Image (cartoon, rainbow, N blue to C red; front, side, top):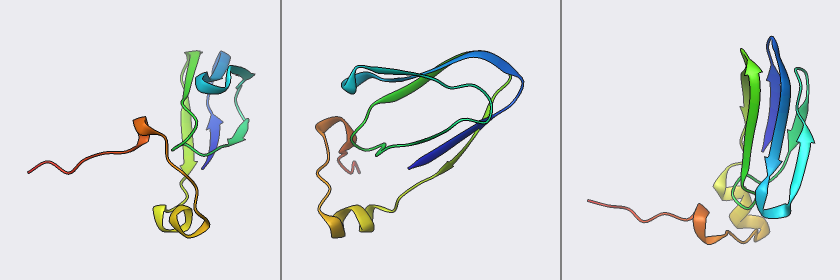
Amino acid sequence: DIMASVGHYCNGIMTLSNLGIRLRYNSGAMVSCSGHNVRHGVTYTGDRIVWAWFIRDSLQNFVGTPRSLYATFIHVD
């Protein structure tokens, strides 16, 4: 997945918690990671918009990307 952040904000920090990584994530920043396997979150002060481009599940299945337990789901009737 690719995430691009824009807006009028400051102190943007993206946390990739299961990797133990914190990134400066100010306006104009772009980050690419597997959202299914990497837990991510953002803190900031101000107004922010994120544009996200997602990799289709079919592509991840084709290349054999494993999924962590928190990224799986069960259909409920």
